[in-house]
Length: 496
Image 1 (cartoon, helix red, strand yellow):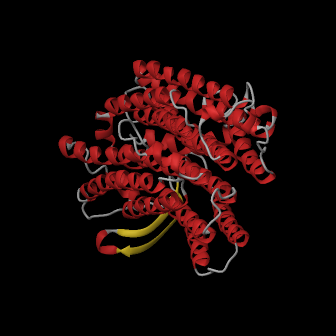
Image 2 (cartoon, rainbow, N blue to C red):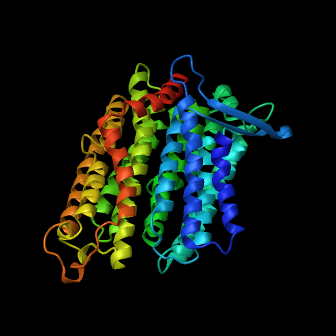
Image 3 (spheres, one colour):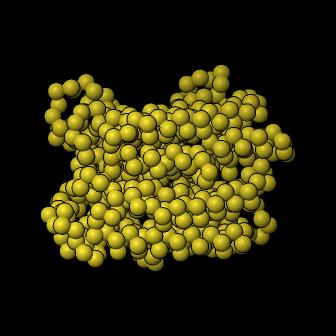
């Protein structure tokens, strides 16, 4: 089922490429169908997934030898963390493919690249082979590069190039670290499960620290963390709304997922030795992202900088989980659970926010916050969707963001109390920037140029309703998600 979940979107992309005469609507429905079928495979895996102390760490495992001399194979499998992220990604890809194109030209290529990106994104979360992980990590750059560069706004080519160069440089650091890691095992293997069990660099301070540095630099660029985040705002501003939603909702999670799966799990001693500096970088991202977002007058740039802020929360939880502080196992597990919930919640919330931003561009051709005001009177459905998404992003109780952040900070306080206390300022600033955004855009006087501003269409309303329903469901009844994710995080922290 996991292999099918990866292959179906790729086959859908191939079918689109081989059908150049297909119309826009047929191409869109074929793409939606491929995404839905892929998601259905993930639902089946979820239905069969077992939770409990006797359940294996990785389930639905399949393995086919590929390069036996290097220990490389087609290995797929999921734990609660990767399954939760895959399910979130599947939902978001369906939503973004179904969302109206901002520039309805070359629809076949547009939807083909979306399906290609879905295939490699799911592949990254589902594979258990380190070489395949790297292959899918790099291929995701290709899909996003073309979606930004070919369907973005004026100047998108430059933003796409900056995105590609930055993240490719980060992936090369990861490749060097992977080589150093697998050469520490005899016989050589790329099997993630074997590397997690072997802990091959335990006791090697210098070598372990250098390999950890390679992984953390590469994943920090992808996440992104301060100060290697500068590629993110221009990429978001120039990308179409649905592409921004995938960039923030799925691709950024590759960085934080990679931090957990590889350095945290495979380099426990080295990660624990450097957990405090990692937490400091997380704190810098929390504060810098929030403060800079507050000063933005461009809607897309403001949302983009909040992603730097929220990914800082996630990395703070990961750093706390890897600190290996004696007697703090429950707090560390709680922090890691919160970090993974934050990945899922941020994907849904920020995905919705970027789709809303795309709706603004489609209606007005601008992201300038000063160009709006009083839209609550003419676009009530859009207002309700934006208010729910904004309140969820600022961490209002009863919504998904709160469930994640309260666990991160409760866990982090037991490990890094001063850093966690200072990090709370980020939540305060985030609340201020979103409340100010809502007041500026939806309330006050309606500009003359916005008197005919259209409300959400039926399709847009349906898509946002699904995403925001999940945000509310996680906020009100998070147990179904916490049980799934907790099954993985307890095993990860317990293994240290």
